[in-house]
Image 1: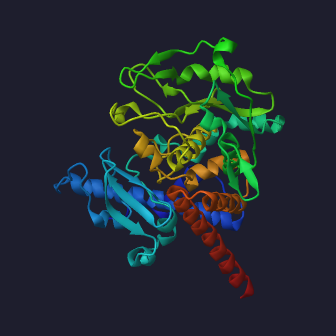
Image 2 (image 1 turned 135 degrees about the vertical axis):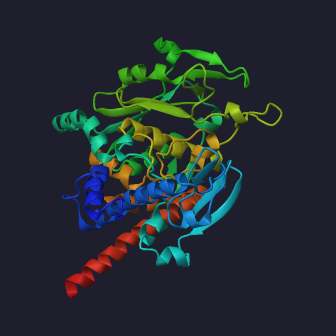
Image 3 (image 1 turned 120 degrees about the vertical axis):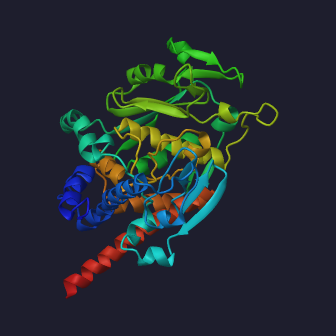
Length: 416
């Protein structure tokens, strides 16, 4: 019996997944070809599922087989979340508590694998459903074709705006951090990171606004468990759009007040609307689901957890404005999360499938973007060590080494 997926079908699906690479450099093409493993592992997962369906034992939720982890066919569920791809490799987290496996990129089995390049940079998620049910590059491009065509006529719309909303505590306003030769305010630090993350776009922070003075009719409530005021996040979309400068590509609100997505739900870190080109995120106190009145208290300083949360949530939500849906291919900055812990344990950076979409809009050089991000985050970590940032730097360095190896191979091939 033949295989389910031929080389021809994989190549056809690959173009559907990642788009046309003809106008990219050979190094960039090689990088994006890493995402082929998604299609190969889809075949493995479907074959594995068929094998189980004919009488094999069924795994209990949260129970994993290490052999399956090694071959890349990982069966994820809500009780087991993969995270931490940066740095030394990938971890398996059960209920957000016990880390039962640490896969190092230098593992002998991984190095021996044909897919070792992928395994050292990205952890593939199981794609055991039809490709068309997830957001491929072609689907994403089709959804924003008009926007891309319009932007070619209005090339001035290349600015991402951040809009602080209402007041912030004094320790937010007075925050300063020296990084290299520069002293950054908190919002200045967010702006600089966003400028590097969305390389090719201009990024600006607008003066703070007061929604009461502007007469914005934002739905509010007091959460019954925390006793804290919350804003309905979707009420901000059209209001923020109305104050975005004419040269704005999008606008992202920043608020200290907690947010909620709908009446029956507790809390959301942030949300964004691609249609409105706007969104809002909060980095205040705590998540109601984990709130304990005897142990929880308001934040009185910016610590490493808050700074990490700011960078993670901001970049994730702005990517939504760029049209990116939640990623189901790799461990990725665009993975969906159901808790604060899960969101904060996910990677800071995009997988090849999502990165290709962002590159199309921002038009950045892939290697240059990795270089400036690595330089900036390294300077940040010398000023203020943050473990998650350190792992992100290690991952960026792996990517840059990947490109260096390609350059060496290309030069050796030319010499021959």
